[in-house]
Length: 132
Image (tube, rainbow, N blue to C red; front, top):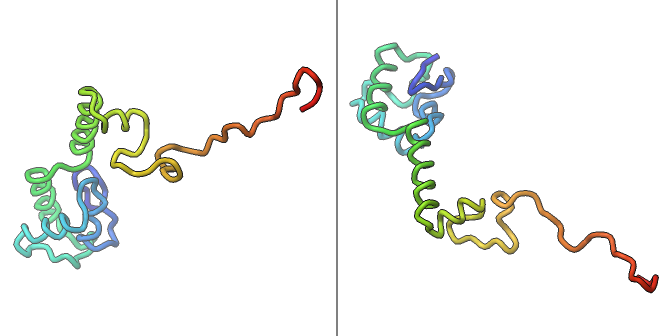
C-alpha cells in the first residue's frame, strides 16, 4: 500500500484515480501531476505496481508544489475565520450555517440549514370561554 501525504492510497486503483483520494487533488491536478513526472509513471499504472522510488517521486512533487490535506484545510478554515472577523457578509453566512454563494433559502438549502423545524403546527390552546 502506497502512502502519499499521510494517506494510504487504494492499491487496486489506477494511480491517476488513486491520487484523487488526497484532499485538494482532483482529476485535473492528478493528470497534471503525472505529466510533470515526464512520463516516468503512466496514468494507467496500478498503485500496487508502483516501486518505492516512484512513490517517493510523487510524494516529493506533491509536498513541493501543492497544498493538500491538513495544510489546505487549515488555509481554508483561516480564510473563513478571516471573513467572519472582518464582518463580511460571507463570514456572517458561514457563522450562521447558511448558504454563502447567493442561493435561495426560502424553499431549498436543507443541507446547510438542517432538518425542517415546523412552526405553528402545535396543539391549539383552549380559549377562556371554553371554545377553541
